[in-house]
Length: 169
Image (cartoon, rainbow, N blue to C red; front, side, top):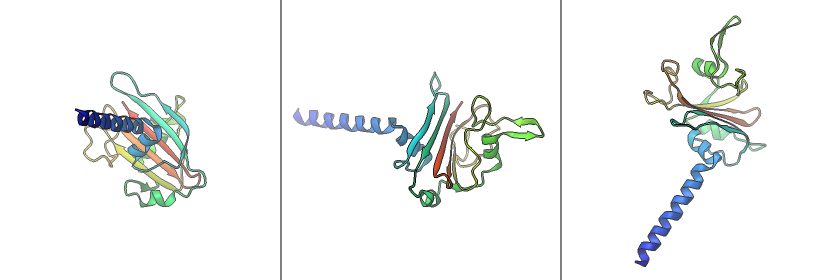
């Protein structure tokens, strides 16, 4: 009987530890962007997911200070060197012909100002989490569906910051 209580106790402690790990912002961002941000400091964080279906967005800026992060991103096969693909450019900054919008930016605030500045030097991560996605690394069909579920992040070598965005609709 004592053994059962010990085993149950160990399982409870392990589950509590796992739950704590998964609920930490840093842990979630690290898992979802396939890069360990443990040494970074989250300077901006906003998460408005909720409701019945869990729709919403998460946006974070992680500052790595003086720690050299370039090699960490460069060596990670899930992260690609900039520039962004055409679809990811449109997700971030929209598309205009003259003064008329063809497609509004998705990764933007309420006034359609992009949340992520244009970055010249760095790496990006994209994962299409939509159930219809054939390849989670491919953004080709991102605009061909009624809803979007994706994770996007970009690392700016010049500022040593990572911008993280998760979108669920």
